[in-house]
Image (tube, rainbow, N blue to C red; front, side, top):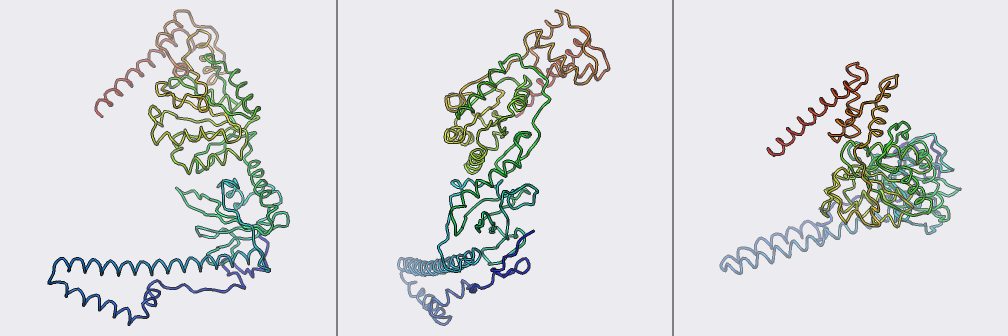
Length: 478
């Protein structure tokens, strides 16, 4: 329930703040006319300008110079007067806004209110504002919303007004604090940007920001959830707890140990997983989010890191999270084989991470040939780990058995023969390929055997060859 602010004389939504001196809106045309001493003086000036032009027709050079000089001086004089109008109007709006702020903060003694502008210093993100102004059931930590304001028109609202800029007043520790917020609708999503903050009592301002951050982070629930962040939206989902594959080609326990040690020692590190599509890079990421339950895990898509504004928002968000693991997907999309504008924001994020809270960046890339010294160096990605195709009988059987148990209640009754394993290895199949072999067997309601595995393998290889054939033809055509 919104609490009444009696000192502001609020009635219904859109009511004006009482006790303020209103100032009319001047018309720009009227201002120009007045500047020339009235409409008659303006007409005389224009007539003189028009009459002067024919006298220059006898001399072409003077004609051109005269016209140019006269028109230029007239345009310059006009521009100066228009500029003066808007400067005067801006000062008027600023004075009026200050009057509104004093009334909102109940500043009856004309005390100087505390003013803060630097949103990076305040560490207030769009997510904090969204949490603050939208209805929710969480404990707000003593923060109580009093009312919303249109600071341009001096009106009070019970909910967020439909204006680009609005103010929200909160009571916190018996202090009244006004936040000015910008709201933009981007692709159907409302984005909030913190602009300014005013208060007569500065001692509680930082505490308010800390409380907003703590309560917002509690609402995310990093213990149970991971988030995906694209610089605009946050999507929360439950942590993975069903990764049943064992990746034998990497030392998974060592990697987990290094991540924990890095974060616990307040350091940063970058790890880059490379390998052909289907080798299990995604499985590794899901397994990491499952076991790293003591640390927030955040996914970002590399292709969304395309401008300085997004990077700044992301850095602020990471700072507020604290120790965290940031998983970067789809590094191939950045064309990282050369240092272009497309990759510059990502490099900036990696370089600036030294000044952030402890963080471990983990990224995946399919094409290892794209990895250049600008990416794989200390302070960006310190370690490159290749996830290879299964190469031993033990690895292949483990994947086949795991995939089989996903769609069947009965274990595989017998192991494959040495010859079958040999024939499988010849095609350098990936983890996803072996899963597809099992799927083909189960779709036919067949039993797991050497014969059914070889039959499904042949179908898979034929399909892959066909795909490769038409992919080459398509590339030639382009």
